[in-house]
Amino acid sequence: MRGKPYPLVQVNDILLHKALVFLVGSLLVRHYMESGDKDSALRVGKIITLHDMSKWEADEFDGMCQYQKFLSLKDDSYPTPPPDAQAACDLHFSRNSHHPEFYGQAYNMYMNDDDICEMAVDRFARGLQFTGDPEDVFRYFDTKDTMREQYSKEFKERFLHYLNALKTLYQTHRDNDTEFYQAIGGLLIGLRREQTGKFYDELDKSLSDPEVVTLGK
Image 1: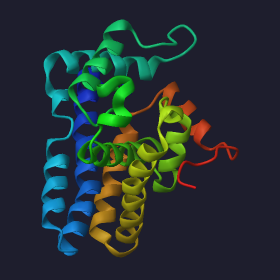
Image 2 (image 1 turned 180 degrees about the horizontal axis):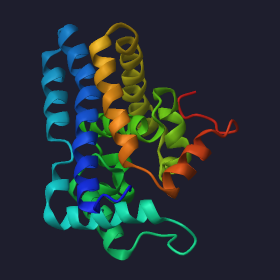
Image 3 (image 1 turned 180 degrees about the vertical axis):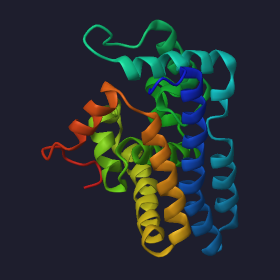
Image 4 (image 1 turned 45 degrees about the vertical axis):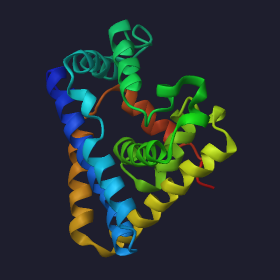
């Protein structure tokens, strides 16, 4: 992590991820408002504003600092997250219903539309963060989403409805809204500067594999 203390790395990750979520989610808010669907615009606006607030809780924050350490040092001698880091992930899941893990095996029945919308915005933003390229958002989840094989057909259709809408809106604004694209580009540069180490090198390599079939096709 270029010598940066892990708490600072975690702070940067939280702030930059929330900024990406806000920018990406704002496309959906603006789309709904321009389409005359004020209720949906306000609903999504609230979702993206309150996203991941639990990461500022001390117990979750401290554990995720250990997870950042794991990501930077991951190798054969450090292959799995330490218990406090995994506990922090589990704690985050237990506090945020946009993660299927919040509901356990019953998520197919109990995740509502707000949960799935937030999940899609969150995943799209993380996909941009980890790949640095919006074209790889779907590819990222085909290679790294450990629960994808359990998704029901209905759940997957609802999730992809939002994910594909975000992809279309993102590509449109990328091509026609210079200020928006410059804002996204600046965030991605900052994120990639912070996130170095073997985990990210391996991720970049796996995402370049032409045999991977993307979720979006």
